[in-house]
Length: 291
Image 1 (cartoon, helix red, strand yellow):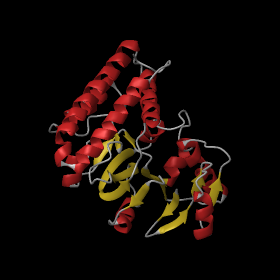
Image 2: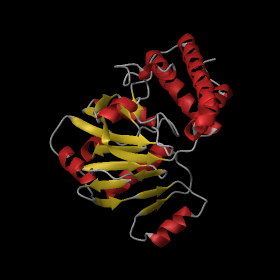
Image 3: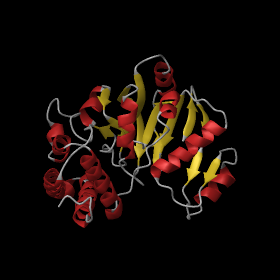
Protein backbone atom coordinates (compact mmCIF):
# COMPACT_ATOMS: atom_id res chain seq x y z
CA UNK A 1 0.00 0.00 0.00
CA UNK A 2 1.27 3.46 -0.91
CA UNK A 3 0.19 5.65 1.98
CA UNK A 4 0.84 9.12 0.54
CA UNK A 5 0.93 10.28 -3.03
CA UNK A 6 1.99 13.65 -4.37
CA UNK A 7 4.35 14.23 -7.23
CA UNK A 8 5.96 11.01 -6.03
CA UNK A 9 5.20 8.24 -3.58
CA UNK A 10 6.17 9.47 -0.13
CA UNK A 11 5.51 6.31 1.86
CA UNK A 12 5.18 2.68 0.83
CA UNK A 13 3.98 0.04 3.27
CA UNK A 14 4.08 -3.69 2.51
CA UNK A 15 1.93 -6.20 4.38
CA UNK A 16 3.08 -9.81 4.08
CA UNK A 17 0.29 -12.33 4.71
CA UNK A 18 2.52 -15.15 5.99
CA UNK A 19 4.34 -15.79 2.70
CA UNK A 20 6.50 -18.92 2.54
CA UNK A 21 8.30 -18.27 -0.76
CA UNK A 22 11.08 -16.11 0.66
CA UNK A 23 9.62 -12.85 -0.67
CA UNK A 24 9.54 -11.04 2.71
CA UNK A 25 13.20 -11.89 3.31
CA UNK A 26 14.09 -10.64 -0.15
CA UNK A 27 12.14 -7.43 0.40
CA UNK A 28 13.82 -6.81 3.74
CA UNK A 29 17.23 -7.42 2.16
CA UNK A 30 16.79 -5.35 -1.01
CA UNK A 31 14.52 -2.59 0.35
CA UNK A 32 15.38 -2.20 4.03
CA UNK A 33 13.84 1.29 4.11
CA UNK A 34 10.34 -0.01 3.26
CA UNK A 35 8.17 -0.83 6.29
CA UNK A 36 7.38 -4.55 6.17
CA UNK A 37 4.46 -5.69 8.32
CA UNK A 38 4.82 -9.48 8.54
CA UNK A 39 1.79 -11.44 9.68
CA UNK A 40 1.87 -14.86 11.31
CA UNK A 41 -1.17 -16.01 9.32
CA UNK A 42 -2.85 -15.18 6.02
CA UNK A 43 -5.45 -12.63 7.07
CA UNK A 44 -7.01 -12.28 3.64
CA UNK A 45 -7.21 -9.29 1.31
CA UNK A 46 -9.35 -6.89 3.34
CA UNK A 47 -7.79 -7.57 6.73
CA UNK A 48 -4.29 -7.35 5.26
CA UNK A 49 -4.95 -3.91 3.81
CA UNK A 50 -6.46 -2.80 7.10
CA UNK A 51 -3.23 -3.78 8.89
CA UNK A 52 -1.44 -1.21 6.74
CA UNK A 53 -4.09 1.42 7.42
CA UNK A 54 -3.73 0.92 11.16
CA UNK A 55 0.06 1.25 10.84
CA UNK A 56 -0.37 4.54 8.95
CA UNK A 57 -2.67 5.87 11.68
CA UNK A 58 -0.32 4.73 14.46
CA UNK A 59 2.57 6.53 12.75
CA UNK A 60 0.57 9.74 12.80
CA UNK A 61 0.47 9.94 9.00
CA UNK A 62 -2.53 11.77 7.57
CA UNK A 63 -2.40 10.95 3.85
CA UNK A 64 -4.16 13.00 1.22
CA UNK A 65 -4.39 9.84 -0.88
CA UNK A 66 -3.92 6.13 -0.26
CA UNK A 67 -3.12 3.77 -3.13
CA UNK A 68 -3.93 0.12 -2.49
CA UNK A 69 -1.84 -1.97 -4.86
CA UNK A 70 -1.75 -5.75 -5.33
CA UNK A 71 1.64 -7.50 -5.48
CA UNK A 72 0.81 -8.86 -8.97
CA UNK A 73 0.54 -5.38 -10.47
CA UNK A 74 2.87 -2.92 -12.15
CA UNK A 75 2.30 0.81 -12.60
CA UNK A 76 2.62 1.61 -16.29
CA UNK A 77 3.88 4.89 -17.70
CA UNK A 78 1.38 7.69 -17.54
CA UNK A 79 0.75 11.22 -16.28
CA UNK A 80 0.57 10.19 -12.63
CA UNK A 81 1.92 13.47 -11.14
CA UNK A 82 -0.35 15.64 -13.32
CA UNK A 83 -3.44 13.54 -12.57
CA UNK A 84 -2.72 13.44 -8.84
CA UNK A 85 -2.31 17.22 -8.84
CA UNK A 86 -5.71 17.50 -10.52
CA UNK A 87 -7.34 15.05 -8.12
CA UNK A 88 -5.99 16.96 -5.15
CA UNK A 89 -8.40 19.78 -5.91
CA UNK A 90 -11.74 19.82 -4.04
CA UNK A 91 -14.41 17.68 -5.72
CA UNK A 92 -17.16 15.21 -4.92
CA UNK A 93 -15.05 12.25 -6.08
CA UNK A 94 -13.52 10.16 -3.29
CA UNK A 95 -11.96 7.20 -5.13
CA UNK A 96 -10.54 6.24 -8.51
CA UNK A 97 -9.27 3.15 -10.27
CA UNK A 98 -6.95 3.15 -13.29
CA UNK A 99 -7.41 0.97 -16.33
CA UNK A 100 -6.37 -2.60 -15.51
CA UNK A 101 -4.46 -4.15 -18.39
CA UNK A 102 -3.99 -7.92 -18.78
CA UNK A 103 -0.61 -9.38 -19.82
CA UNK A 104 -1.96 -10.18 -23.30
CA UNK A 105 -2.81 -6.52 -23.89
CA UNK A 106 -6.51 -6.96 -23.21
CA UNK A 107 -8.44 -5.72 -20.21
CA UNK A 108 -8.88 -7.20 -16.76
CA UNK A 109 -12.66 -7.61 -16.37
CA UNK A 110 -12.63 -6.99 -12.61
CA UNK A 111 -11.79 -3.28 -12.65
CA UNK A 112 -15.13 -2.25 -11.11
CA UNK A 113 -18.76 -2.00 -12.10
CA UNK A 114 -22.35 -1.89 -10.90
CA UNK A 115 -23.66 -3.41 -7.70
CA UNK A 116 -24.50 -7.11 -8.04
CA UNK A 117 -28.02 -7.78 -9.28
CA UNK A 118 -29.62 -10.19 -11.72
CA UNK A 119 -29.67 -7.40 -14.29
CA UNK A 120 -26.01 -6.39 -13.90
CA UNK A 121 -24.92 -10.04 -14.00
CA UNK A 122 -26.91 -10.63 -17.19
CA UNK A 123 -25.39 -7.56 -18.86
CA UNK A 124 -21.89 -8.83 -18.11
CA UNK A 125 -22.14 -12.58 -18.63
CA UNK A 126 -24.40 -12.45 -21.70
CA UNK A 127 -22.11 -9.95 -23.41
CA UNK A 128 -24.65 -7.12 -23.43
CA UNK A 129 -21.94 -4.73 -22.19
CA UNK A 130 -20.54 -4.78 -25.74
CA UNK A 131 -23.66 -3.00 -26.98
CA UNK A 132 -23.67 0.81 -27.34
CA UNK A 133 -24.40 2.61 -24.06
CA UNK A 134 -24.25 -0.63 -22.06
CA UNK A 135 -20.52 -0.90 -21.34
CA UNK A 136 -21.00 0.45 -17.80
CA UNK A 137 -24.24 -1.37 -16.96
CA UNK A 138 -22.73 -4.73 -15.97
CA UNK A 139 -21.47 -5.96 -12.63
CA UNK A 140 -18.05 -5.63 -14.30
CA UNK A 141 -17.19 -2.66 -16.51
CA UNK A 142 -16.38 -3.32 -20.15
CA UNK A 143 -13.29 -1.12 -20.38
CA UNK A 144 -12.93 -1.14 -24.18
CA UNK A 145 -15.14 1.85 -25.09
CA UNK A 146 -14.22 4.24 -22.23
CA UNK A 147 -10.54 3.34 -22.55
CA UNK A 148 -10.55 4.02 -26.31
CA UNK A 149 -12.26 7.38 -25.76
CA UNK A 150 -10.34 8.10 -22.54
CA UNK A 151 -13.65 8.75 -20.84
CA UNK A 152 -14.09 8.69 -17.08
CA UNK A 153 -16.97 6.54 -15.83
CA UNK A 154 -18.80 6.73 -12.50
CA UNK A 155 -19.30 3.26 -10.99
CA UNK A 156 -20.87 1.66 -7.92
CA UNK A 157 -17.67 -0.10 -6.84
CA UNK A 158 -13.99 -0.12 -7.78
CA UNK A 159 -11.52 -2.98 -7.66
CA UNK A 160 -9.13 -3.09 -4.72
CA UNK A 161 -6.40 -4.25 -7.11
CA UNK A 162 -5.25 -0.67 -7.71
CA UNK A 163 -7.52 1.60 -5.74
CA UNK A 164 -6.71 5.27 -5.19
CA UNK A 165 -8.84 6.82 -2.44
CA UNK A 166 -8.82 10.04 -0.47
CA UNK A 167 -7.20 9.52 2.90
CA UNK A 168 -10.02 11.06 4.91
CA UNK A 169 -12.59 8.96 3.04
CA UNK A 170 -10.95 5.59 3.70
CA UNK A 171 -10.36 6.58 7.33
CA UNK A 172 -13.99 7.58 7.78
CA UNK A 173 -15.24 4.12 6.72
CA UNK A 174 -12.54 2.35 8.78
CA UNK A 175 -10.95 0.62 5.82
CA UNK A 176 -12.16 -2.47 3.98
CA UNK A 177 -15.11 -4.47 5.31
CA UNK A 178 -13.76 -7.82 6.50
CA UNK A 179 -16.90 -9.85 5.75
CA UNK A 180 -15.06 -11.96 3.15
CA UNK A 181 -11.58 -13.46 3.17
CA UNK A 182 -11.07 -12.47 -0.46
CA UNK A 183 -13.32 -11.11 -3.24
CA UNK A 184 -16.43 -9.05 -2.64
CA UNK A 185 -14.88 -6.75 -0.04
CA UNK A 186 -14.27 -4.04 -2.65
CA UNK A 187 -17.95 -4.17 -3.62
CA UNK A 188 -18.90 -3.66 0.03
CA UNK A 189 -16.34 -0.86 0.32
CA UNK A 190 -17.95 0.79 -2.70
CA UNK A 191 -21.29 0.91 -0.86
CA UNK A 192 -19.66 2.74 2.07
CA UNK A 193 -17.62 5.14 -0.04
CA UNK A 194 -20.57 6.12 -2.25
CA UNK A 195 -22.17 7.68 0.81
CA UNK A 196 -19.25 10.14 0.79
CA UNK A 197 -18.83 10.81 -2.92
CA UNK A 198 -18.46 9.43 -6.42
CA UNK A 199 -16.22 6.59 -7.57
CA UNK A 200 -14.52 6.94 -10.98
CA UNK A 201 -12.80 4.74 -13.53
CA UNK A 202 -9.81 6.77 -14.73
CA UNK A 203 -8.44 5.32 -18.00
CA UNK A 204 -5.67 7.90 -18.47
CA UNK A 205 -3.76 5.89 -15.84
CA UNK A 206 -2.86 2.25 -16.51
CA UNK A 207 -1.82 -0.66 -14.30
CA UNK A 208 -0.70 -4.07 -15.53
CA UNK A 209 -2.45 -6.85 -13.60
CA UNK A 210 -0.83 -10.26 -14.06
CA UNK A 211 -3.44 -12.15 -12.07
CA UNK A 212 -3.60 -15.89 -11.63
CA UNK A 213 -6.79 -17.82 -12.30
CA UNK A 214 -7.60 -21.01 -10.41
CA UNK A 215 -10.70 -23.07 -9.72
CA UNK A 216 -10.32 -22.43 -6.00
CA UNK A 217 -10.03 -18.69 -6.48
CA UNK A 218 -12.92 -18.66 -8.94
CA UNK A 219 -15.09 -20.64 -6.55
CA UNK A 220 -14.36 -18.18 -3.75
CA UNK A 221 -15.13 -15.27 -6.08
CA UNK A 222 -18.51 -16.67 -7.14
CA UNK A 223 -19.43 -17.55 -3.57
CA UNK A 224 -18.84 -13.92 -2.57
CA UNK A 225 -20.81 -12.67 -5.59
CA UNK A 226 -23.82 -14.86 -4.81
CA UNK A 227 -23.59 -13.96 -1.12
CA UNK A 228 -23.81 -10.28 -2.06
CA UNK A 229 -26.86 -11.04 -4.19
CA UNK A 230 -28.45 -12.71 -1.17
CA UNK A 231 -27.69 -9.65 0.96
CA UNK A 232 -29.44 -7.57 -1.66
CA UNK A 233 -32.60 -9.62 -1.23
CA UNK A 234 -32.19 -12.31 -3.90
CA UNK A 235 -33.96 -15.54 -2.99
CA UNK A 236 -33.21 -19.10 -4.18
CA UNK A 237 -34.96 -18.58 -7.52
CA UNK A 238 -32.98 -15.45 -8.42
CA UNK A 239 -29.76 -17.09 -7.28
CA UNK A 240 -30.48 -20.10 -9.47
CA UNK A 241 -31.07 -17.80 -12.45
CA UNK A 242 -27.86 -15.94 -11.66
CA UNK A 243 -25.89 -19.16 -11.86
CA UNK A 244 -27.60 -20.24 -15.08
CA UNK A 245 -26.84 -16.88 -16.66
CA UNK A 246 -23.18 -17.10 -15.63
CA UNK A 247 -22.82 -20.65 -16.95
CA UNK A 248 -24.56 -19.81 -20.22
CA UNK A 249 -22.45 -16.71 -20.82
CA UNK A 250 -19.15 -18.35 -19.89
CA UNK A 251 -19.97 -21.38 -22.03
CA UNK A 252 -20.64 -19.20 -25.07
CA UNK A 253 -17.38 -17.30 -24.52
CA UNK A 254 -15.42 -20.51 -24.20
CA UNK A 255 -16.62 -21.75 -27.57
CA UNK A 256 -15.95 -18.37 -29.18
CA UNK A 257 -12.39 -18.30 -27.81
CA UNK A 258 -11.85 -21.92 -28.83
CA UNK A 259 -12.83 -21.13 -32.42
CA UNK A 260 -10.48 -18.13 -32.49
CA UNK A 261 -7.63 -19.79 -30.57
CA UNK A 262 -5.74 -21.08 -33.66
CA UNK A 263 -5.43 -17.47 -34.86
CA UNK A 264 -4.68 -15.72 -31.57
CA UNK A 265 -2.49 -16.60 -28.55
CA UNK A 266 -4.61 -14.19 -26.51
CA UNK A 267 -7.75 -16.16 -27.32
CA UNK A 268 -6.02 -19.39 -26.32
CA UNK A 269 -5.18 -17.86 -22.94
CA UNK A 270 -8.70 -16.56 -22.47
CA UNK A 271 -10.23 -19.92 -23.34
CA UNK A 272 -8.22 -21.47 -20.50
CA UNK A 273 -9.34 -18.70 -18.11
CA UNK A 274 -13.01 -19.15 -19.01
CA UNK A 275 -12.74 -22.93 -18.66
CA UNK A 276 -11.31 -22.41 -15.18
CA UNK A 277 -14.21 -20.11 -14.27
CA UNK A 278 -16.75 -22.66 -15.51
CA UNK A 279 -15.11 -25.39 -13.46
CA UNK A 280 -15.25 -23.13 -10.41
CA UNK A 281 -19.00 -22.58 -10.85
CA UNK A 282 -19.59 -26.32 -11.04
CA UNK A 283 -17.66 -26.85 -7.81
CA UNK A 284 -19.94 -24.60 -5.79
CA UNK A 285 -21.69 -26.31 -2.92
CA UNK A 286 -23.07 -25.29 0.43
CA UNK A 287 -25.43 -22.53 1.57
CA UNK A 288 -24.17 -19.98 -0.95
CA UNK A 289 -24.78 -22.35 -3.87
CA UNK A 290 -27.76 -21.06 -5.88
CA UNK A 291 -28.31 -24.39 -7.63
